[in-house]
Length: 149
Length: 149
DNA sequence: TATTGTTATACTCTATAACTATA
DNA sequence: TATAGTTATAGAGTATAACAATA
Image (cartoon, rainbow over all chains, first blue to last red; front, side, top):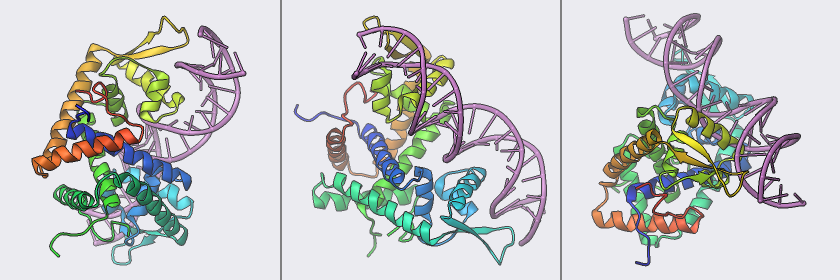
C-alpha cells in the first residue's frame, strides 16, 4: 500500500499539535506566549468580561487574572470598569494590543493556509464547513467577531 | 445563507483548541498533565532517547529533563542507560506507564471519534489520509509506533 | 571538537482555596 | 445569598545559559 493508513483520531491529535506549533512560532515572533496571543485574538471583536473570557479560554478565573495582569503590564489591554455593574470589568485591546492581535492572526492564517493548500479547493470549503459544524455543536460557536477577521 | 461561513485557518485553530481540551480532560481523569500524557503516548512504540524525544515534542532538552523527572518520580518511566553510548539514555515506559498511556489514547480516541462522527464515513477516510499527508510533509511523519495503537 | 544530557535560574501558566466588593 | 473578580499559594511547564561526561 502506497499511503500509510492513519486513524482519524490520531490524525486530529497530530494536526492539533502542528497547529499549536505554528501558533507558538508566530506568537514568539511577536514576543508573546501562545496564551497571550490567544487572549488578544479573542478580544478583536470588542471588550469581554473576565467571566466570559474564562469560559472562552477554558481557564479558571484566577488563572485569567494573572494572564490579563501580565498582558496589561505590557500595555496591550486595559481593564475598563463596567458602569452598570461595579463588580465587573471589561478587557479591551489597546492600539498596540490590536496591532499585535492582527499581526498574530495574519501570521497564523498565512502559515495554515499554506498547510491547507495540500487540499483541493473544494475540499477546503467542505472541511471548513464541517469543522464549523463540529465547533458549534460542541460549545465553541464561531462568530464573526471571534473569527478575528 | 443557512450555514455560517468560516475561514479554514480559523477553523483549524479552533479545532486544535477543541482537541487540546479533550486531551486535557482525558489526561486529568488519569491525574496527568497533557504534557505528561503526550510524553507517555510517544513512548508506546518503544524507548526513545532524550534528544529524539525533545525533537518529537518540540521541547528544549532542558525542559524535557524536568518533564521526564516528574514522570519518573511517579514511576511511569525509567531512564535506561544505553550500553553503546555511555552519554545517552533511553526513556522507557514502566508497566504502570504503559497502562496509563493506553488509557489516555483510548479515552482521547473515543471522544474524538464522537466528534468525527459528524462527518460522513467516506469523508472521514479522506480527511485522515489528507491530514496524514500534511503531517508527513511537515516533519511529523505518522509511523505505526508513534500512532500509539 | 561535537554531542548527550543535566543543572541553575527566571519566568509564565495553571488550579485550589480563601477573600472582597457588589448585586 | 449569589456573582464578579482578586489574592495567596503551590506546583508544573518552558527557555536560556552554563556545565559535565563521553564520543
